Image (cartoon, rainbow, N blue to C red; front, side):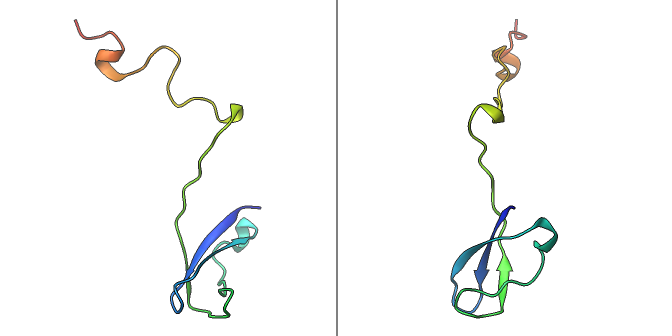
Length: 70
């Protein structure tokens, strides 16, 4: 199950909830009991062998790094 981050608009507390994707948009009360919360956008960092490499093994680097500049 994914973890979603939320921020309470009343006490400004940031918290996370582990919940199914089907409930990602459902209201979430903060740990202090306030109901006025907003879901935050978060990024995911992929690490380890399973994530692969973002740069091709051939060097990449755009035009000059790829050897196409004279």
